Amino acid sequence: MKIWIVGLPNVGKSTLFNALTKSYSAPAENFPFCTIDPNVWIVQVKDTRVDKLAEISQSKKKVYAHIEFVDIAWLVKWASKGEWLGNKFLSHIREVDAIVQVLRYFQDTDVVHVEWTIDPLRDVEIINTELIMADLEQIDRHLPAIAKRWQVAWNKDDHKLAEILGKIQQVLQQWKIAHSLKEYLSDEELKLIKPYNFLTMKPFIYAINVSQEDLASAHHIADDFMIKLQSPVSIVSAKLESEMMDMSNDEKQEFITELLSIDKVTHIPTLDDLISITFNKVWLMYYFTTWEKETKAWTIPLNSTAPQAAWAIHTDFERWFIKADVVKYSDLLSVWSRSKARDWWLLKMQWKDYIVQDWDVMIFKFNV
Image (cartoon, rainbow, N blue to C red; front, side, top):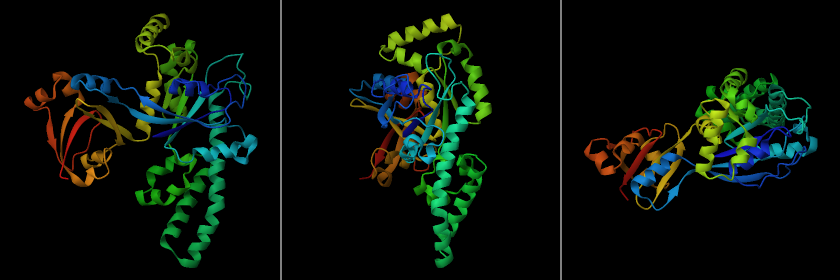
């Protein structure tokens, strides 16, 4: 899964990227237009379920799910028209699975916002306007030729494509992102427009960057912005995460526990929350395989069948699939042994029509 992080200058985007990747590969100085070339990093989704399964199986190796995060350059007004080379960077984000927009909520007089005031909803409008204009420009460039080609050759696909592009164009001309249209398109229609990689057809996740002082109100802030944006929202504190970046897991847990007592809150939003929301938004999940050699999380689309899940391990395994032995993670954890899970009828044999569930632990049987 590839996720691009976008935002206006000085909203904490590069600081968040550094915390996500636990590196200092993205500069985060206090002046606009800092990031020029995209920074790319593959992040392990540190899942405690992998750790527990590895402990049960006494695995020699653990392999977590991965997300590729990309920190692109800032976006500003008129980026779609090439302002400060913005159009160049818009082209970088077309072949991604989702877009995380970082919105500044924190107040800091030492860090100047490019628009001079703090207004997350205004920032959303600026960013989305640039993405909409970029998509409109692409439609304006291709639609006349497609329509003309259809009139000459009467090709059914060209006619359908022109019709779909026209619908997307109408939505964009109302200054709305086109993602809301996606659920009304068939798989065939989505396949036709896939080569265009429209920016506004991608899932959006909004990361509200708050200060440590805002954490006590994190839940209310998230609810408020979910209503206003009608999209998934994750509360993050990029500065706090960067301070915890070099801590061990035990030190980090101790630090968070101390914050909970000081700020009198029940939950500190972390980057794990952002990663989890991102997985859900792009309709991905993962199942597990575990044995002495290795415990691994495998990323697959939601509602995948058992043979489709096997394809994630090897493309030929879908064709050779016979059956799968499946045990729920919670069931395996309760007995702490695969053999006991089998003895207690917790491990079940599943066939080709089985829909894999999140947290399934699986063993596949093949006819090679």
